[in-house]
Length: 122
Image (cartoon, rainbow, N blue to C red; front, side, top):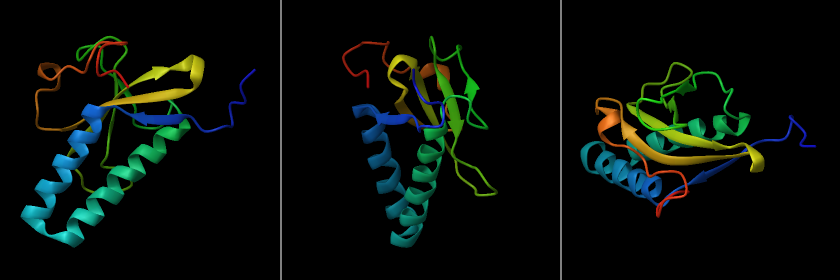
């Protein structure tokens, strides 16, 4: 039996890694090194929060985006951020598979993550 106190694993897909690189490149070019560093730390805090599992405060089910998709906005704890973490749960391995990191102004259902078990699945 799995210990519920143990942290969940958070695994980024190739798409999520590319999203992160693009977000930080854009931030660096627009706002400079220090702001890119701060924004990267904010995204990392949101990803670490997901180690609490799918019941983490702020997680929302988003079946409109895709089957089993959940989201967590990175703006947490009074911080301002504009991106959303899209993920799926692999309960049998206590893993949260991060599918994409998308800007919150996007029409998220128009940018569906890969299907579970698809070629770019986490």
